[in-house]
Amino acid sequence: MALPPVLMYHRVASAPVGTIVPGHYVSPRTLERHLRLLNARKLIALSPAESRDVHRSGVLLTFDDGYADFASAAAPRLREAGFSAIVFVCTGLLGDHNAWDVALGDVREPLMDAKTISDLAKEGFWFGVHTSRHADLTAVPETRFEDEIFGPRRRLSELIGAEVDDFCYPYGRHSSPVRKAVADAGYRRGFATGRGILGDPYAIGRINVRRDTTALVLAYKLLRHRMRGSR
Image 1 (cartoon, rainbow, N blue to C red):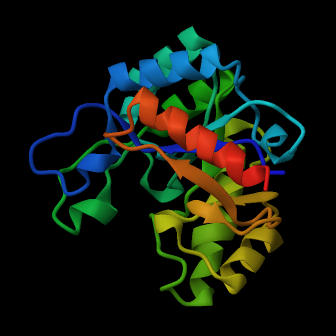
Image 2 (image 1 turned 135 degrees about the vertical axis):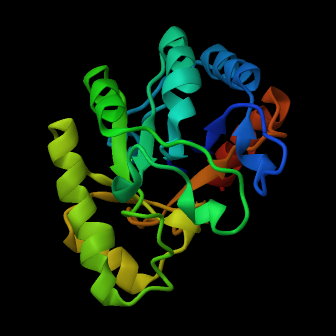
Image 3 (image 1 turned 180 degrees about the horizontal axis):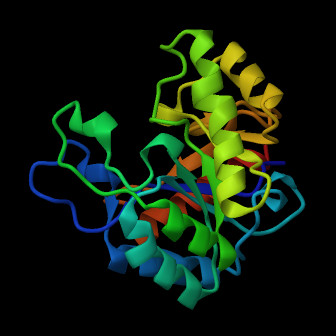
């Protein structure tokens, strides 16, 4: 039996001219249609812990990178629809911008600051770590793990006033040493991309939601997820 579906979003905004990742931008209207679909199918919002239970019926929404438009565009629509979500943030870039993509020629986009994250956590949104500066953990020496895995958990836990259990691998890239470090740092779950590794709580797969993911396409992806789990 498959785990409940975990959806992966990035941006909730119109794609700006010049972006190198247009697929990351889901329009606010498209998000509204997705939430209506989930409600129509009675897929309730699960907490991160509940999403590990194969017997729970629901869905976990995740948002990568911690863009400012999560607070301005996604959160209000999630509240209205009765959903929450887990947001993975880069603790060394709070209140800054998407430096990892700008370095590759992308447009500069703001990230949420510490106060915004703290306020959203008090409202019931969940937060997890996405390293300190969006590092590809498979391409850095293990001596960097303290700065990118261990330290960010302590910082984010202090900021939101609760233990942080969830980690998300930038670019979806992970390895056995990376997963071990995430476990050793005290996280209870690690989120990857694609199908992940079956049975491994440190390589949880997610359904990628992109700009061209209409409500019909999302319905198909959810059906495919369910059919795979019934095999």
